[in-house]
Amino acid sequence: MVQYYNRLDASFGALADATRRGVLVQLAQADASISDLANTFRMTLTGMKKHVSILEDVGLITTTKVGRVRTCRLGARAFDDEAKWLESYRQLWAARFDALDSVLEELKAKDQNSERQKR
Image (tube, rainbow, N blue to C red; front, side, top):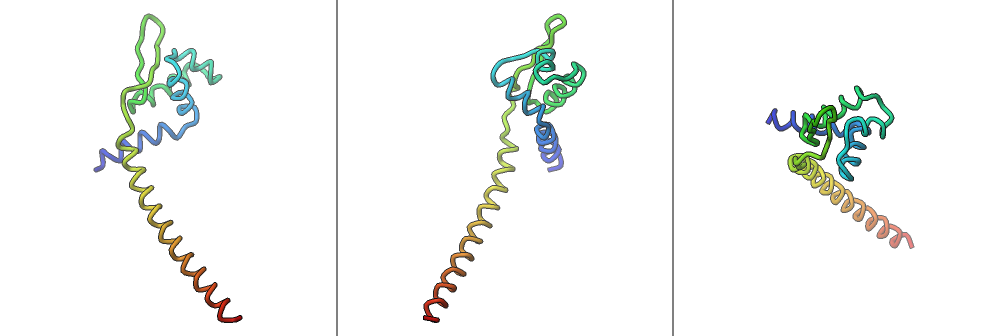
């Protein structure tokens, strides 16, 4: 169980940063070198290397080095565990909102009945 949450923590931690999410969007369109990504996001090469390393550590991207150029591409890892975790909470909140809707409908009905009785 602890390993499961460590992986979720790492995945959500990687996705918590806007630059890293932007890198994923960029790589969904085409592979890119770290230098190209650094230029796109107007940051230093060292800064982009850190972002790429975090994304690579959780398996969201892969890199290959040919000569002096390191090319990044989306990784093959899917978000199955993350989606399952999110879905469990989506179902929990949906059930709570459904229960709240029922309470509100009951209150409306009581309010309408009391209005009718006043007339």
